[in-house]
Image (tube, rainbow, N blue to C red):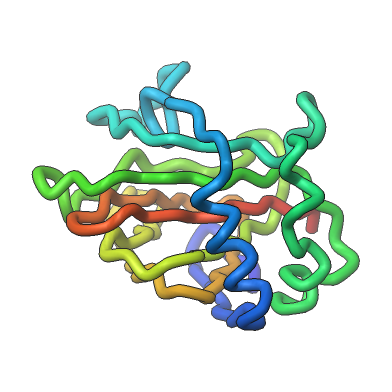
Length: 181
């Protein structure tokens, strides 16, 4: 499961259909907030390139606490599906990326979810979309692409650089969860 400087590992899991339907329904009801970039909207970073705006709803954040929508999600079912039923969550948010055919296939800004904390990242894809998730090595070369599929969860070490990309045809939803190791 975990990666280090010279390796990459990802595991794939599937969420129960009842949980899939619940999350898919919640995706369309959440209030989303605009961010100028999906990785570095409010600060500079050596890997920051073009800005890729998106919308997000923070469900859990250590500093801000829990959103009123937090309790509606099947967190226990997600934890069980990925073999981490007792791990504590550090952060969770739902993202919405709208179709941008003009930049389709272009990775957004490469990033890690928690700069100063170790974590395990779980990305859940509530719907099928054509905007891949990209994974990078230490030199920022693409080493893997993961296509969103309804019900799929990918899990990887939080120190792994990755990025989303814009879909060309349909809205791309992603539930991003950071767990303490």
